[in-house]
Image (cartoon, rainbow, N blue to C red):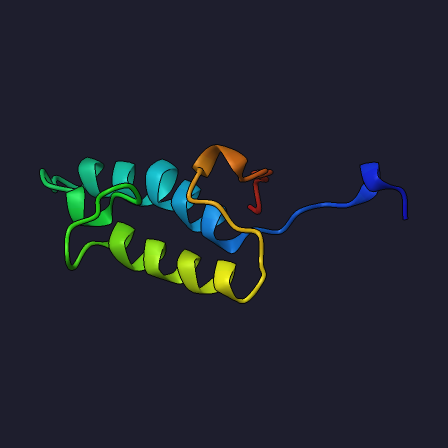
Length: 81
């Protein structure tokens, strides 16, 4: 298959995107004021960002090219109603 047809599947970038674009805004809309524990870029001890970073490190060690950059996620949103 030609290089232009290869699609990169990055679960870390997708998780970072979903947390930033769906989880955090939804929590804020529901009245949660402190969403830092959900922030994929927060490196607090028990934060989602910390665990995502640890997961990314393990995947990189295993040879998988992953990134914490939510902008690297190519997401297509469709209406399923």
